[in-house]
Length: 241
Image (cartoon, rainbow, N blue to C red):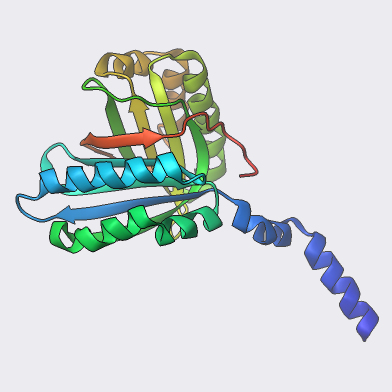
């Protein structure tokens, strides 16, 4: 009985599914937090976000990007988009002083927190130095399950092309909900509204819209404005990460 059992174990270890699980600690970590800001505390939220994000991205090697934003039609609803090199880097962030300082102040500023764990599908950015013209988009797309692979094969090359040829495209991230894989989250940063409108007129973006029009059941573009944006920059799409 021992020999067949050993053969089975070797087969499992060499299989792609098992290998993926072994490699999981090296996968990049992406989180989206939905936050409720207490009344009249939006300025305090901006202050603590700036302090936490600056210290984390500047001094933590594995913290790749952190973005704070709020709904443009309701400053009491805020979001945090976070990107880490891997799970170990995320755990180090949680144990570092910047996060501990944030956690100490948070109860007085934030009255609701919902974490959405995301599976990165495309990650690409340039080093961002935001100014008053910088804008961001947060879009949620529900993809029909039967089109999941086809949708991915269309949208990922479009995002890569956008970053490559459009100067005003600063960051493009796509991820799926770890609990609902056909729910896609897109977070994008543009140098200006003009850069975004130019992006919408490009052949690659128009092709994406045309080819995927029948693949989704809903699309929710959440109106958001930057609160504080910071990244290390230079992330390029790697299907193995």
